[in-house]
Image (cartoon, rainbow, N blue to C red; front, side, top):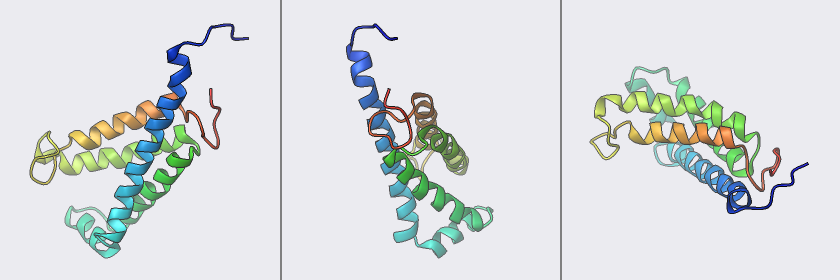
Amino acid sequence: MNTAQPTATNTFQPYATTLLRVSLGVMALAHGLLKVLVFTLPGTVAYFESLGLPGFLAYLTIAGEIGGGLALILGVYTRWVSLAMIPLLLGAASVHLGNGWMFSNASGGWEFPVFWAVALLVQAGLGGGRFSLTESTR
């Protein structure tokens, strides 16, 4: 039985966790849809192949970003989805590794995808927060 008095930390933390979860989900969904709607599927496949990667990884990446983004927004298996998305971001970081640290560098650096991967790791540790479909709200 928890007899602790409510504090700002335990009152607002579930909402902060939700804000992080939904923000990460919206970003992932936007990146996936960008690859489909702007760059197009053939264009994204061609880009992956120009990097020396197999073209099918473009489809897996898009599915991971769109599916993972929707799952995070809804709070479906937040911990597992967050962990599953980390390799996508580390892959993106490896593509940008030669461009330097700052993402504002020509062709983008590796800072943003690494930060995003760390944020996903934090989300996995925190869980789903409030309004999560498959996890406790505590």
